[in-house]
Length: 454
Image (cartoon, rainbow, N blue to C red; front, side):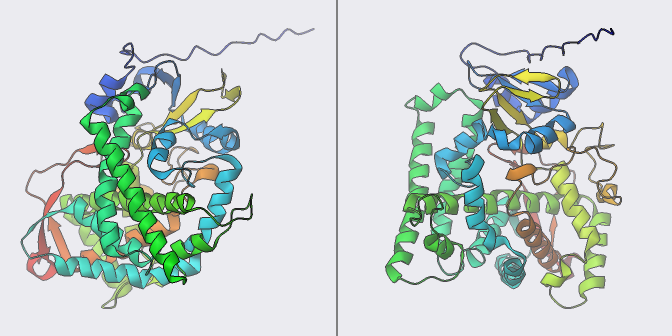
């Protein structure tokens, strides 16, 4: 008889520097992106950090293990710490729930992101991009990220919420969401007891969260009072029923989904647009290739839905921005039962996390990872191992609005770039900052009309 020797996997290493009561909050507070990015080189495929004392958080850094976590194990995992903190704003929404409830909520929202609806949105998106440029002044210094947030909000108002929620409502909502999203980012890094302290930070967070939900609830009540719908997302949610009870959705349920779409439709889109405008200003050769492609495909006419798949170089520019400047820095899951991940067995209640921002900058998969090089995507993703590039996540919880977002990015860029050039001061570099998402810390650029720039 042949004996088989079973070799136990090495123990999961623990990152240095954890403190009693605080865990790794100090390192995360100093520079969370640098801390997370440095873990792979030091510790390998899995490493334990402490976000909440008494709870294990395992950062998964190997692409195959990340893919396994998101796809193979996806149905058996809960959403984890990041989504619990997001739930403090959103409640139980398609983003924050897991399992059958997530599937039900996803089905309720899916019709707004179908091909026919997205095709209808392009003209509206383009109109908002043109209106944004009309408001800019030649030679002014523009806070680009704030301008892109406003543009993203305006596009969301006119497309998914056409007619039901006005721009003034969303402007107020934006102010509150900014406070809440920064607060969520901080709360992810700090132990839970911090939230119970009577600090001004916590009071601002609670007030902004309550005001955001009140703003949406007022919009819902106003639409209900009219007794008519407009065919948009809010009207669809008001007409929907809960699959488990057959009853209409409650005001809180509708509010949670609206807030989810408001966050997802502005924070991520605005940051990606900002980073692309930044990179094009830094590399005129890339910008010239984008403009040449737009001239060749569009001529003198505005971008239309049929053009979205006919701009391969612009598509590679967007893909490279989603690689180098991904907005996700800590995405979580949680084991509900004893779970096997690769060679390791994890007990129930283990937090799992991965960082798209760090994963997409790994030199093992992306040569010269800090260079913005759209041509690295000429061969698509064929040379990458599964799980190395996850711009929209993977598995059951893959972003529901990925096609909407790409259409929005292409439409906005094809419109803005042909009318204006945004210039950086010579030698200016912009650092990322990670709160709930990764965004430019400060990005001020000078507006030049395309004729003046040339």
